[in-house]
Length: 152
Image (cartoon, rainbow, N blue to C red):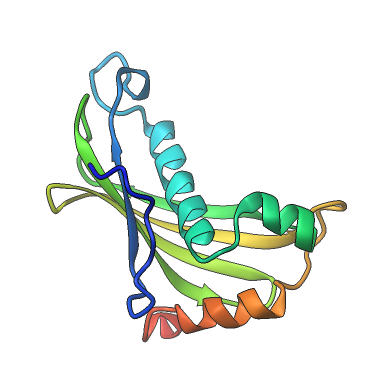
């Protein structure tokens, strides 16, 4: 695993971060507890937005904006185990003025362990009511939507 901060390639729409499975991530059966995958997915989305230049604190303090998960669909394919080195991927499937839909995967040595679709709403950080994504971020996000994904 690299200690470098993940920076997305501006020419690429895909983004991924490495993570490792620790003892605290596993259940009594020795595999990653299902809820822990949600934390792995959240970290990757957070790092993706940070790498675009919009950290969570900056969005909240400068733009009064937070993103909240509205819905998730997760397909668990294979278990991850203690000490596995994983890659957590993020791509943008859809971007609307007040919401985004992410496609995410977790892989081990190229083998797909999990697929997820995550729908997030843009909310006013003070009132938690829906609001528009700031225009510069909205434009940047729209350039990163996977080709053909809007049609799905």
